Length: 298
Image (cartoon, rainbow, N blue to C red):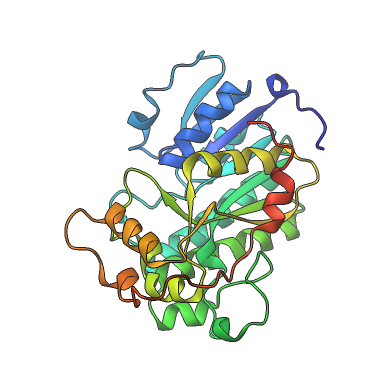
C-alpha cells in the first residue's frame, strides 16, 4: 500500500484544465485537499466557472503550450503536473498538423517541468491508440499491454491521425523525461465515454478493426480521474498504465457505443461485423493498472 499522502501540503497543476478530464481532475483534487493551479487556453475559463473553491486553493492560469514562460508560471510552486493535451479550438480535428502541435507541446511542457525544481512527478495523459496500431497485431501470441507501441508509419499510411499523434507525443515526452530526469508516468486511456462523444471523434477512426481485433475499449470519466490520482499518489507507480473499464467485445456493445456516438444513422464501422458473432476475444490487458488500483481510496 502506498504511504499516506498529505494533500494539504501539495500544490499540483492541471494542464489543460478546459476539457472534461481536466475539469474533473481539478474538482476531484480540490475535494481531496490539494491546492490546484488550473492551466487553460484562452477559451477554457467557462468550464471552470462552476467549480466552487477557496480562491486561495484554486488559481487559474492562461497557458499557451507554445509559450514556455506561461507554462513555467503555471508550474511555479507545484509538486506535480497532470498533463492533458487539448487541441486548439480553431483546429479541433486530428491530422498531421495537430500531431506536430501535440509533439511540440509535449516537448515544451516536459522541458518546463525539468526546469521547475519543485516538480516531483508528472502524470502524462496518452491513449490506447498509442498502443494498438501495429502491422503485426493480428499475429501476436500475447495480449497487448503497456509494453506495446503503435507504429507511426502504419498510422500515417492508414490516416490514423489520433494514434499517430498520441504515439509521437508520448514518445517525445518519455524521451524528454528520461533525458532530463523527470519522474513521469503515463495513463493510456481508452475511449472516454462522456456527454460530448460523437461519431467524428478521432479515436473512432478504425473502430471496426479495433473491435475485430478485441482491443476496442472505453473508460468512464470517474475511473479515468481516479486512475490519474492513484498513479500520482502511489510512490511505486512507474511507466505506462492502460486505463479502461469496458471492452466492446460483442455486437450489442458495438450497437450501444454507436448509439452513444450518433443520434440517427449508426456508423458503418463498428456495426459492419456479423451480428451473429456473439463475442470477440479480448486481446488487450490492463492488469498492471488493476494491481495498483486495489488499495486506492477515492
